[in-house]
Image (cartoon, rainbow, N blue to C red):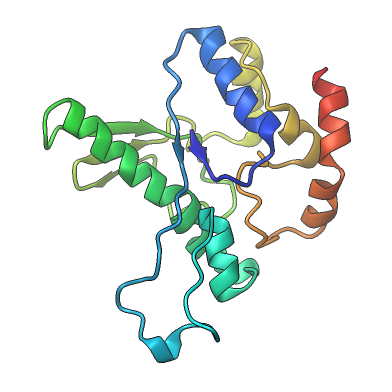
Length: 192
């Protein structure tokens, strides 16, 4: 689980609960502030110089401002991709260096083009293989699969239509900000 540090807590709880239900090992990486980028020149820094943040998101906002829809790839990199890279390093060190790592994802072809540039069901990046078993399924196909195998739905997704883990502020979908603003009371009521 890529913990962005700014997600809705019920989403993280849902991931843990699903892992417990199916007996899967729960593992997570939390997005970390990266510090001042090495190639950046002093004159390219924000006024007042580089500001460290307590979270990866805070550090980004303090130095570059709030992201807009066009910044989603950059936010994905800072909030999720770097965590995935750390996880892969940790797994390969714990096993055998250079061992291939298989990551299973739920990305579908008919989803948003924002989803990290996936263009096929299986992609290889160095020794990491990404597999998307439901890639060619539609949302309707996947819902039928979910019901057949009693896979629990994220209650946050049921309320606002997204997982609620990123919340990077890019607001790529109209009405997303308003939906996120209503989540706390609705999810707590829905879950509990």
